[in-house]
Length: 385
Ligand SMILES: Cc1ncc(COP(=O)(O)O)c(C=O)c1O
Image 1 (cartoon, protein in one colour):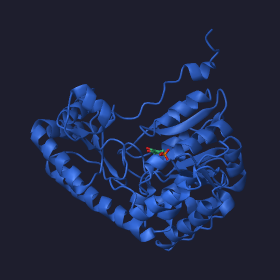
Image 2 (spheres, rainbow, N blue to C red):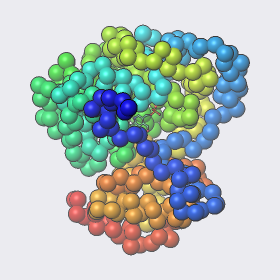
Image 3 (cartoon, rainbow, N blue to C red):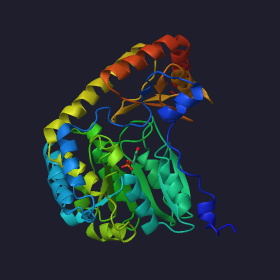
């Protein structure tokens, strides 16, 4: 007897990430090492002091973890305040405004389960983070996709897309896959214009790579906007994608709702220990971040010299806009055949910034693949401008 799967669930596709190196190796019969630039992970593994903390936590592996992750939330209060203080800004977030989850993707799903019902609408810039579509479908909601301008979210158009049915607006800032970001002041002005009964999710998975005078987190806006939810992750800058830790910051009522629909013990004790050790070592974190930023600058410069159009990245990946049908997947396959895994989207190719050595391989392969490819990108750019 087949189970009566809920219609919303039966029509969902099972999540498929990018093409893993294992899959590419098996499919193409490759045996050598592959350069993995498809998943926006940090290219540097956790430091030894993080692993030592994990080992220590594993000794308590027979016990359930602290389901509220109190110590981690306390450390995050200090972390967020320091992050903003670097740019002479204030951030007053209390522990009860933070909720942790099994990656920020789980918190985003929790948010949908709390606020989105059958027939509602959600507004998203597009292209953006694909699981948003999945979550909307899960809840039976309609997705209103608002096209980008210059690869960047078009906030005025998103405001115009609001209807009485809109329940959640999602702003992925910086945006995945296009790597661009909206300035902080524009986000604040946007929040001022969104009706207060619509939840605004600002997904900041890559925000550390954009920090500065003009760009950065919306956490400081939380004091003014009770409908704002900021989602953050340990998977990117913190280098802990395999541990699965994320957090959301909002007002205590929303935090409480998110906890209502969450698992009982969303983050294991080893993952909490890894996150805590990382947050408590800001200099090490900063050193890793700077290495990625230096490489991002170099890769962008060199690709532009090769003739590619590259969006100004505020993330740990770069975006090659290639909207011609099949152009991006064609390039991705050609790169895979020479040992480089990237991620193809209908609108372009997303390439994670790797180590210097990995980036050298990417640049060499793109250069060998030749001027025909980069001129395809140039044509694309002319068509768009
Ligand atoms: C924009 C964005 N949001 C959220 C996530 C989810 O991250 P995680 O669930 O690993 O915390 C990702 C991961 O790629 C992302 O790109």
